[in-house]
Structures are given as C-alpha cells and as structure tokens.
Image (cartoon, rainbow, N blue to C red; front, side):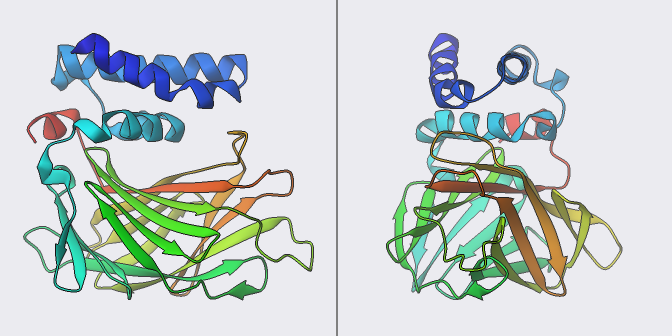
Length: 264
C-alpha cells in the first residue's frame, strides 16, 4: 500500500516538476515525501497541512481522490448538492445561486458566488451546467470556463479552469475572478494569499488560502487575493501565460493537525 501511494504521488508530480527550477523540484518532492512518511509512521509527528506548498497539496489531492471513502462524496439533495467534510468540520452546499459553508454544530456560515471575470472591466460569467461525480462537482459555465470543487482530507479544493483568455481590449496584465461574499462570518484579509473568516468573538474558524495558478505549460503564475467591500478578488498575471489557465485556492479549517485527519 505504501509503495502504491508513493507511485501515485510521484506520477502526479511529473507535470509540476517539469516546469520547476532544480531547487524547486527538490523542495517540492522532499516536502511531500516527508509529509507522507510522517503520516504513515506516526501521525502525531505531522504538522499542520499548511506547511505544504500549494503545488504539493494539489498533487496529493489528485493522487488520493479516487481512494477516499464514500463519506467524501457529494450527494444530490432536491435541486442542489451537499457534502460534509468531517476533517475540517464543514458542511457544504452547492447550487446555481451560491456555494455555502456551515461550521458543524454552530450557526456560523458563509457563502460566495462567482460574479465577475475579466480584467479592469469584469463580465458576469455564464449560467452553469452542474456535473457531479464522487467527491468532485463542476459548474460548466459556457464553453471556456469551468468552476470545480474537490472534497478531500486536506480541505475543499476550489478550481477555476479558463480555456481561453478573457477579453482584454485595454491590455491589462492581471486577470481577475470576482467572488461576492455573504454570511455571518467576517472576512479578514490576513495577507495577499490568505483570507480568514472570523466569528463574533474574533476567532478564525475557516480560511481561504493557498492560491496556486498555472498555465498550459504548468508554469506557475504570480497571484494574490484582494478584498473590496464584500468582493473577494483573485488576481493573476497572465501576460506571459499560455491558456488554458487553472486557478486553485483551498477552503480549510483554521487549524488542522495530522492527528485530526487520521481520526477521520
């Protein structure tokens, strides 16, 4: 079992490593190898999963996704879809109107809707056709944009796949995705890569972090987060990118230890 998992992880790194510098390749592989070995030998030794590079988290999520228990699978309920992530104490619902997150056993919740895509001038994205398979759900928005979610022990991986460059008649260097937020939690930008959701006591209960953007050649693109009132903006420099471009942030519990993950 150990060898099989290592082979899957190594295979998932082939495209990532091809575009990395020699030092980046080494650090990326070592960080994942250490994390996996620590979990297998002694879960108590593993640190929080935020020590992993974003590229490593995406690769691990992809490699383990097909082997996860059915509890990670998304279910259709009425006109929408729902799933629970016990590792991160989150209940999530998906609909055409919004993606909503509820903190288990509390009244804390927050939601967002993709409301804009483009550059300085944003266009509203097309309405979505929803496709669900196991622990993955996709919102296919027209012919060139897919919004997707993957439920894993590392958290909920969000993804935006842009098959072609948005209209950029002004020649701006940074593309933008706009998410409109709402809910009972306060959204506080901690840095240009981490958004914290805080409850009424100021405690961070959930975070939106680890944004990683890459192009068709698996080349990482500079990216950051911005807040403008109730709008969360995902910016990335696509001036030298070859499309399609993939944008991958993560929704996670504020603090997650390997012990918690192992118990689930």
